[in-house]
Image 1 (spheres, rainbow, N blue to C red):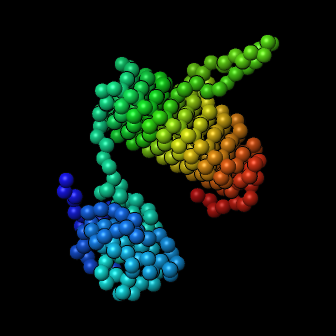
Image 2 (image 1 turned 180 degrees about the horizontal axis):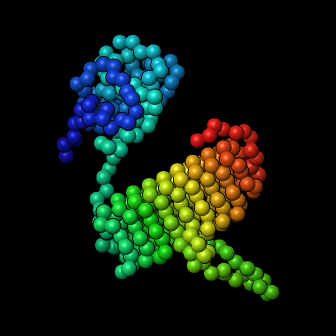
Image 3 (image 1 turned 30 degrees about the vertical axis):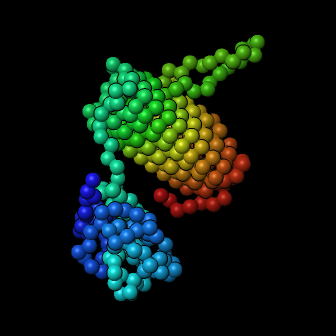
Length: 306
């Protein structure tokens, strides 16, 4: 299979911020690689901003490197390569990767998938092997990998990615003991709404609401092995890291980040632009723009507004 060769002009056209080019402008790339494993046909990036980044850039064999614009470059740094100077090299590299070097998943439903006859699925959706989709709605360009189980009463937006082993819409753990001490399950009749651009990593579990819906807001990303309880509302563009547990009826504001292993008690309110530290246990409400960590989690400082 012949690799596509992409010109410097095409690569730069995929970068949304302002940029400056140092070095030859007739270069091309056919691969994206780490800076220390690149060759002349590769594009890579360097996000380090201290002067010790310059030897790394100079010694790299990459033909094109996206670099921070604030460093002091001289001709030796780019005599055998081209530098694209931006304010956020990692973000610019993500944009280049997304347009030219990302695997393309073709639409279609694998023959082994089981789909409810009343499910509403856009023709551009991809559903992988051994997945199950109940009576629900799935928007355009969504990718559902293999071995995913999606219950009925789930609404999934556009450009969503759900990785292997995830479960969406199962019943939550809501019980009441009777006089004999036996646990009686509270019926769960709600659903799940997943906004546009959400990504749910492998083996995550999202419970449906009791009466209303569990909601995952637009652009939110969720790591492996997360557990999201019934009636949880997660805002837009949040980052829910791997192995996070969020108990039922919790509210999380937009742009918040829960680090790996964090646990949130039921019915907690976490504000916008909040950071919850690694392995923290949240037992009290957290206001907007706070950083909190520990067990139990305590607010340690404020941070700039998002």
